[in-house]
Image (cartoon, rainbow, N blue to C red; front, side, top):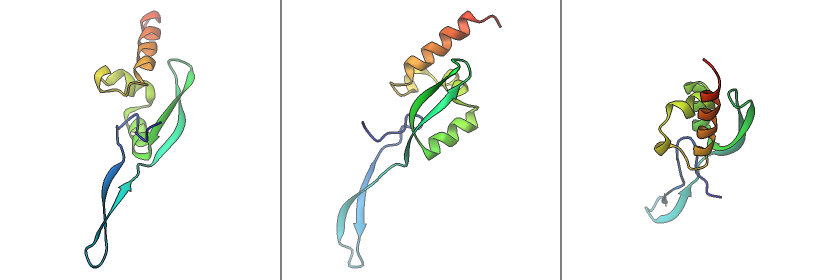
Length: 97
């Protein structure tokens, strides 16, 4: 399983450690990935996601997982979240409102 945020698509970055003598040693900058589940009010169940701390803040800012998925284009979503968006759209189409 790759260390990639499903919300922001942030991934591991590569750089150098620099000593006082300016010697370069390769290193990686890992993303703060959290395995968590967020509650979808439309689906009435929890959805498991792998999100960075910044991605979780983004979900809060957008109004939850439902609002985020509805307002984000399918092409910009992580491949694991596309079926969830389809389920949400299907449930919304059935409900009268």
